[in-house]
Length: 175
Image 1 (cartoon, one colour):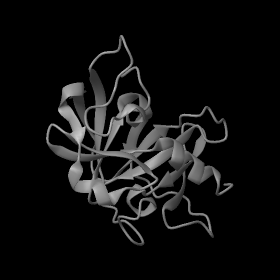
Image 2 (tube, rainbow, N blue to C red; image 1 turned 180 degrees about the horizontal axis):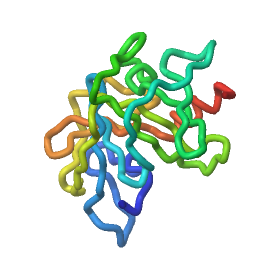
Image 3 (spheres, rainbow, N blue to C red; image 1 turned 180 degrees about the vertical axis):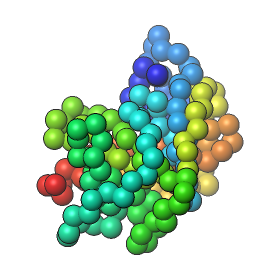
């Protein structure tokens, strides 16, 4: 497991993310496939990846909140990041490879310690070198509040989600 929990906070606008002194320049991450994007998450942000199970829906919730999912004695909210982010209108397609990535939230909120994120495939491990990350200039018009950064990892375009903002959006719903 990596010893950091949030990759995007130290991103410079013209280069690789700044790492605090004394930390390694390699970060163990997961590349999480979505409908038309790949999320990059440090291993420490992901508690577990489980088989997809239909979340229990709640009336009156936005399209991006798919419902709640029973995981390890918790009822965790499950989101569709692509819908939350505005990349997909309406519902996402669930396929035989879909999973739920259970993310650790960052603020120590006992009411929301985890968030489920629907994936469109099995996340893959990726060791990301500090020198292998660069800004993705092709996405400059694609800024969004739920995204910390759009970057290239070894030439592959990926999105680093802003887990803090996602957590706040869910908390604002008063589940």
